[in-house]
Image 1: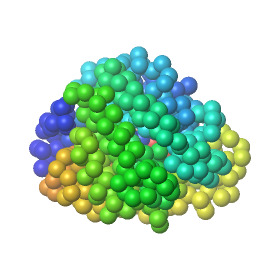
Image 2: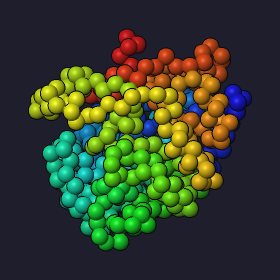
Image 3: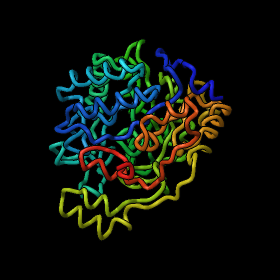
Length: 388
């Protein structure tokens, strides 16, 4: 199985040098929404560490989809920076994807410059904002914006797009029965809730053309009562396959309601508060963070049961994500038929984790699910503070 892990593999129209993927996790290295030299060096190092495909996150397709002022946005002048990043990764023998999406109702008005947009008039507790219900002309505009973002990825020389249909972002909000209460053709039945995400996927697929791969991240479980669950997620997976996805990456959780469902482990509330620039939010986190941000116990391979059901339901490659720490677990995933595995925190701890596995120097990551790395985003970039 170790030979399978480190052998080349076809992901749609592209070839990866091995079956390891750096999951899309916001780096916090895009000041003023621009590609920084630090971001380029971060992904260059991952490629040097022999990661097969590294995913740059997160790029909003429009300004009204931003959650932070310092995020990439496809409407900004970022093409030259993305080209330098792609060239840096390719020079090290790696492949690179850009994660594109839209935050929907939990977009930050201070970053986006206006009232958020959502499936309904959804309320976001964190931003204390109520979204504007997306009209059909809004949805047509957003489909075009997703398509243009995909064109940007292609022009910049990237190898793939990761389309974000998970974690409670806009497309996930349309899929979830808890956040999509519409009564038109975009709400109600699963078929209707799928309509807008599939329109986006088909437009992105067409913009990418035959040379770039399309990976779709989507939820198998929103993590709360009334949300999307595995029975509907199986049908979502089949629909994504039919619409042109090259690979699926099952995940879970809702940023605005169950953010640590997708991570598991400790919630470093004090560290989040210390790094929060807004004084009211800082106080809110200190006094009420424990009540609003639920902690979920960590265990290895925490999405495995749901991911197995997705694997059995589709024929395209399925990428496993969620609590991969040891070589024996990776070998198990390949025996079960998963195409590749994705990880973020172990690579934050050690960007050479994959190379050291291949050389036989280690058989597991020493990353602990403390999640202190997540709190570092607001301090100039994601990192493991335990390394210093």
